[in-house]
Image 1 (cartoon, rainbow, N blue to C red):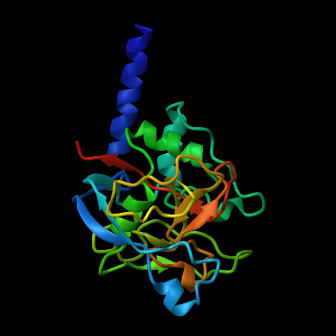
Image 2 (cartoon, rainbow, N blue to C red):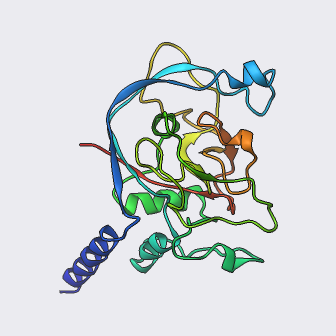
Length: 241
């Protein structure tokens, strides 16, 4: 009887989350694209901060991706379900980051993965993330805010990109599955998932305090997966099977 009650409670929570405005997905068709950029070579003289974006061909399979970055309200549902750890608040300005429609921040990579698994998904690979970001219409973004004063804004505050995805540029960087490392550029890479191991994970998309040149679809940033950042959040994907 106890197990039935637990199952019923979990089912109710699932449908509550499914009815949330931010619990929406977009189906992305499979395809090939050119990952990376010539920006660093052509405009930055191969500066250290951007010389990891070598152009190469990639194929990705079809998948579903969250329309919005995961919000504080979304993450709290996972905590109420007994799956996710409680949110960690900003040490000095908790009220600036904990509104229900703002993207959840201060989650480690593993905590983000735990949430996505609860949704029967995972974090996107770097290739999947860039594939859906590198489109004709990039969408609006929130960036270039002063670190000690600025903060995130409610998800979906600006125009979506060509896939109907919000905040792919700015608001918060987004955790990806991949360890940070050089690209494998041999031939067309089929569903690449990065190095087998590493020290840092890759985040993508720029954040509320990022400068303009970091808001590029090919920009790569390495972050310690065990640390928490006010400018890093996430969204989830799941395979189309």
